[in-house]
Amino acid sequence: MNPGYNSYNKQIILNNAEYLDIPIHMFETDIFDIVATVEESPCYLCARMRRGYLYKHAQELGCNKIALGHHFDDVIETVLMSMFYNGQMKGMMPKLHSTNYEGMELIRPLYMVKEADVISWRKYNNLEFIQCACRFTENCMLGDNGGGSKRQEMKELIKKFRQTSPIIDMNIFRSIHNVNLDTVIGYQKKQVSYSFLDDYDKVIPGAQEETR
Image (cartoon, rainbow, N blue to C red; front, side, top):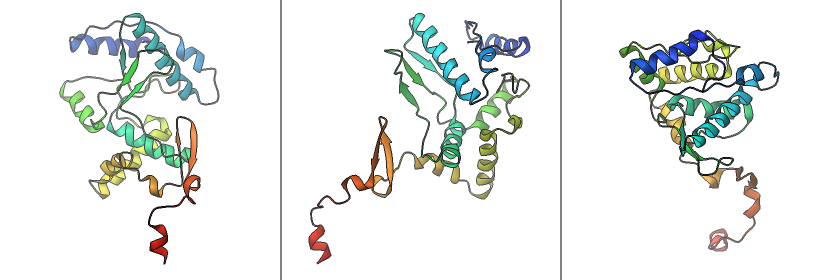
């Protein structure tokens, strides 16, 4: 899907596909033109629109999945951004059923692949990638500073963590797999909020004996 890349960035994608001998079908959209006029959360709107176009076009082609390129670092960056800037413990799922396109599924095949390994693979194959190619950051390439975004802020933080300890990044990842609900004050499931007070006063078998 072409959301409105300039001719240079679009050609990079086509060149990579040709070099890797990957058949490519690109369809055009005007997403970048639309979000360029939005002041509040343009990145969020852009991501939603791009995903919607992909679902719709993939379904028309008879596909039942779309695959996104999010990797391990994207996952743990999302966890930290949600905590620091949204006040939520929220992760990025490896696969999701679409709620708007029946029978469609989103998958993230690179979920466990670290960004450093992606960059090493890119360098080994003499490839040039585009990372953020919208109107705000058209010249940004993979590995650059990313224009000072919140995600780039998380990248720098995780880089420091890795210098401190080799296990911190994996522990951030594992934390969303090992949530202990007995110690969580509140959580949401299917847009319904729950509190530890909901069943705090319920009688627990053996509790009376323990307090005697």
